[in-house]
Length: 504
Image: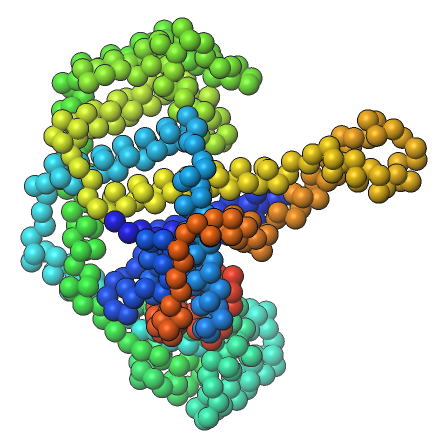
């Protein structure tokens, strides 16, 4: 299965060794021209839809230079993925995470295939819910002339006059989006040319909503609209009602959820009642004592074998819980440390339920579908890339004695005759700090990725199909319109900010 990785780069604080790379699987809708290949790295294809998704998340502009930059970055990421797969050996904690990901997805597959297999919703109920709950949506641009609650009559009158003037311009030859960018007091939509996301009835303040649904699609509403926020000039862009077929799967999921919860609870209760589960309170107390130490002290070989719970399908040992404890963030560790015996047993019971579900899934030979297998592949690649890039970052922070000596020689006067050995570590700290600072920020992160990619590029065949860049731009424009963003206002690295649904 072909899968795609893309990245959103974000800088951490000054103490971070390397800013984390948050990897997400690109959601490509499929179909021409979205499935057309823009680039290839070895056997991996990068499609039009995947590049457009990457650019939309990163806020790139609608021009071929930005497409070229995005394609280069995606090629770099694929090269880093291949390099990481070759160079990085998972640690014990990494391996535990992989095992946990696989088990969670296997349980979810088992739920669908077995536990929820008989849960259905009548087609008539689906259509009834659609008719009662799905109404028309509209999309609009607006220009807000803001008025403070404490404004005087004169200030309110001046604001109204300004709005009237803007309405006349909007009804004439002026570009509405440009007027909004220049004059709107709504920071959420002004920078997007006044564009708001699609909204239904009940999501906006009443006067604004009434105008947006009364106005004709493609036209400026003929009057200035007053709300508690000020005066609005409104242009109705489009109107739609999502079809039943488009929403059918979502409606079905929503209506089946209560039934699924009830069926699953009954299934798990049956498993637990027939599992012969037993909890060993004295061994759980031993775990609590270990966790209560400051800091929590590592478990011994003998302690690792202590059983905290047993059941027909297996057991849970103190060593297993310790291994899990070591994999979670410090905030989660503190929460675990705060558990008393009763709470710890409750937590163990949840883990037993998970083990029983995994046992049942394996007994019934549950196999992951292609989507879930792809999710595992993507998450494993994420782990490899993050871990390998951390290694690269740490390597860049290492300052050998030869570099320290050269710095000392070049700045000997500053150290006033102090011997090298006396200031060696002080100089090393200075140089590490300088390197750490240089590694902060998205541009620095991209340089790290590019450097790793360059070191691997000669070993992998790379193709670029620039004739597909126009297709990328066409799809990207659609993405921005779906997001309620003004495509012309997009800037590289800028994240889309949805407008406040209640304060247009």
